[in-house]
Image (cartoon, rainbow, N blue to C red; front, side, top):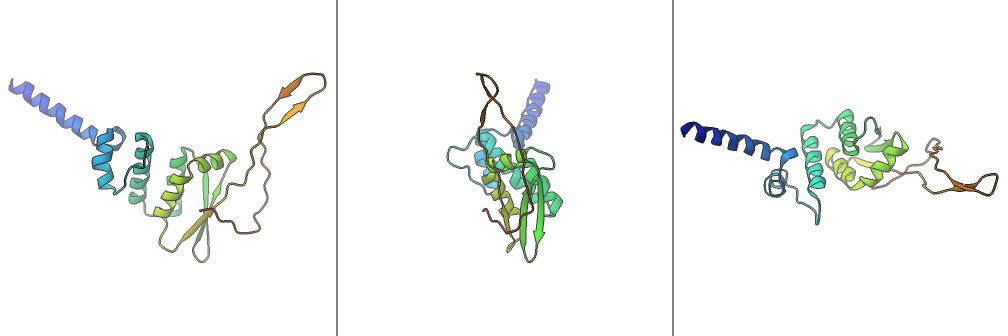
Length: 169
């Protein structure tokens, strides 16, 4: 009886420890504990996974020292990609966020709100940042020899050096 009570208590302690870990936190744990610890509120109709990701990004920012490689690693983590971003700094206090591939650019555009929140929290006061998504997506059909119409898809990248500053916040 005493052994069962001790075992039950040990299981409860282990479960509580897992429950409060961010990856395993329940909806109530996210809303009550984690949002209070990190001073973040859940957005209207925000799913647990999205809120957990924002909390994880906030923790990563708090643990980082704000160096260029760490900032790049946080953005890469948001996108779920490796080497997706390149941060370039310009005098006096400007950071340009460049995307290393069209897939990274598309992922960044779809996760722009999280990236904006992360960059605003990562960079020091007075440092501004900018980025751009210079691509065009469209569908193209071609008629080949004969009477059959064949749809196809193609990815093409055309680029040149940027000759003017751009700003997207």
